[in-house]
Every structure is written in C-alpha cells, then in structure tokens.
Image: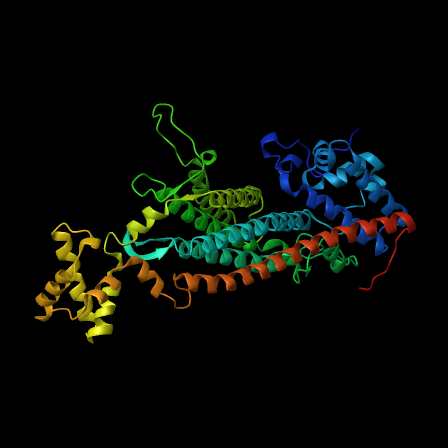
Length: 506
C-alpha cells in the first residue's frame, strides 16, 4: 500500500481527518517549498556528517532528493504529488527508497523547526527581491531631483498652499522615506536571518545535532540561541507585517500626490498612456489606473498586519493553525509591495511634468509671504510676531479685494502695517519684490536639507553615497545566501563521493 504519511489512520488516529480540516496540504505551502527542500538536504548532510545517518543511508537520501530536482516538472510539482505538506520530502523518500531509508530523514526534527526554517527563508527570499527594488526606486528619485532642481512648485499643508518648494525637494523627501524603509528592512533582516533548525518543537533533541552547520548551509548568520523561543515566539512575523505596512503607506502617499497632481484642477503631471485606463461611457477619460493600483497596497498591507497580530493571540504554543493564514498574507504582501515598487519606479521614470504651470502656481496663492515677514524683521528691525501679523493683514486685504498674490503691491503692505503699527512697512520696492518672488523664496533656502538647487545638489551627493552603501549591504546579503547554496551542493557532492562522515564536535 502507498505510504500516506504519519497522520494516516491506524496509528494514533482511527478515522480519516475531515477534508476541510486537512491544513497540511503541500499545495498550501506555495513560496516556501524551495526552502523546505533546501532544509531537507541540509539536515540530511548534517546527519550524515555527524554519523547520525550511516553513509549509505545519507547517500541514498541525498541522491533521491536530487532526483526530485531532476523530475520534469520540478521540485514543487514532485512535492505536491507526494503530499504530506511540509513533510513531502519524507513522504517522497519513503515511496522512492523505502521507509527504512526515507524514514530516517526526520531524525531530530519536528514540524516546528521545519516550518519555521522555511518561513524565515521564504521571507528572506522576498526581502532579497524587495530591497533591490527599493534601491532602484530611490535611484530614480535622486535622478529626478538632479533633473528638476529648478522646477519650482507649491508645497502644501492642510491641503492648502503653504510655501514654495521644488519637485526635486519633493522627490528627495520620498527618497529619504524609502531609505528609512530600507533601513527597517535591513535591521529586520538581522533578526530574521537566524536559524530555528534543530530546535524541533521547543526543546530540541537529545541527539548531537550540529545546529551551526545547518545554519551555515542555509545561509543563516547563526542558530537562534533558545529552542523554545525559536519555535513558539512569533513577534518576528508581526514585525515583518508592520514594516510592510509602513512601506505600503509610503508608496500610497507618493501615489496619492501624483494622483492629485494629475487631475485637471492641478495639471502638474501626466502619466504615459500605458499606466492609464479610460471609460466605457466618457470618451475623454484618462484614468490613472496604475496609481490606484499602487495606492491599494496600503489597504492590503494594513489588513495583513491586523491579521498577523490577531493570529498570534493566545497563550504560548496555542496559535498554530491560524498562522498558516498570516503566513500567506505576509508572503502575498511581500510580493505585492515589490511589484508596486517596480511599477512606481517605471511611473516616475516616464512621468511628464508641466513645469511652467507648477511654477506659476507656486506664488499664485500667497505661499511666499513667509519671506515678506522675514524681510520686515531683516530690514526694518520689527519683531517676528508683529511682522507675522502685518503680513496676515496684508494677505487678508488682498483676498478681500480679489487680488491674486502677483498683483499685490507694496502699497497694500504699507496699508496693512498702518492698521497695526500706525506707520508704513519700511520695505523698499526692491525688497518687497524680492520677498514676493517664489523662485527667490526657494533659492534663499540653502540651509542643510533645504530646497535651494545648490542645497539639493549637495544633499543628493550624500544620499547617493548612502544608497551605494545600502546596495553594497544588500548585495552582501544575497551573496551570503548564494554562497550557502554552493556550500550545500558541495557538501552533498562530498557525501555522494566519499560517504562524508565528519564528527564536527559537540
């Protein structure tokens, strides 16, 4: 009779489990199947090297696992066909080489460390895709900042014109936000890249397992130092979901800005047609579908965060079955955010700006008058609070009389000063004109982090250096994993050629 796995009837249980309760189905493991396969191989290597498997048994197991890789439809299909969920390797081996050999693979392991290793490796794989995508997006934002240092535009607070800035300053703001997302992911990676292998279900094993060897072969930095914590603490999943939700919110905010600016009322930007849709009834419509799609990731990520945290409620060791849903949510959100980061990179690369319109709007609604108050302080010796109040009256009078900011005059400012100070403002026509110039407003802000073209150029060099350093770190993390993959295959080759038994020390 075909082996059906350790959960089959006639062992501990006498009835077949109801189909809808069969959570340990291989097809549900999705992204983690390659990680499970790698762990099966690394565990078999370690058992053989430690003498816990006879050389012949180790060779038979490793040969069969490699045989699975050679099957026409690949490892995932072979494991799904074998069944057994995370134990599909054992189930495949027992059917292929018999229980006397295949049944030895699980020595010293549990479903606990098997799935926890796979979960961490799978999240790591997703991070190794997301981090380079974020670096590419940051590079595009820095490139936009170099291109549009002189592109003056309004800045907004409370949805109202606040102060003039530049598109470059806006772009570098988001580069900084995504740099922090990168930092969070890299920090998370350090806590993620520790191996639960050998922790079994909470106490490890009485066998002399080499946890460090398995960790090395799977590209982890080290084993987790506490076996119970390795399996039954799941704050890491909550942290992953929180970092993803934060990155999703940043993406959505950027998309919201472009979405608003693409409206006819703003008209600052236009998306290439391939990112847009149209209407079945309104032929004039050009809908920014790609931006709506990017925005949606924040909602999904927040839902995933709530789901992951909720799944971890309860006493230690109780939440297990719920975790299969939160696991899928994490993997799904990792893939979604990586994809949306890529879409955003393409949108920004080919975005079209209406620079004249943006520049005209920058000073059209009184956003520059902070510098009128500063001019009063600088040139007339007035204290800031009185200067602020004079300019407030100046703006109110202009609005009441239907004047746009470019039409405002020094006489109007003097009238406002007369109402509050019983004297003219004291500014010359040249000083007033300079204070009311939106482009000059930006150019004066040469302080560290400011929007002046020279400041943006200066800070961009610093940001580019940080981006280069982040790329180096990311490349190093990926090389560590690829190096471990080579080391694992080399260890298997050695065992297949020589038996490979090595007592590595307890």
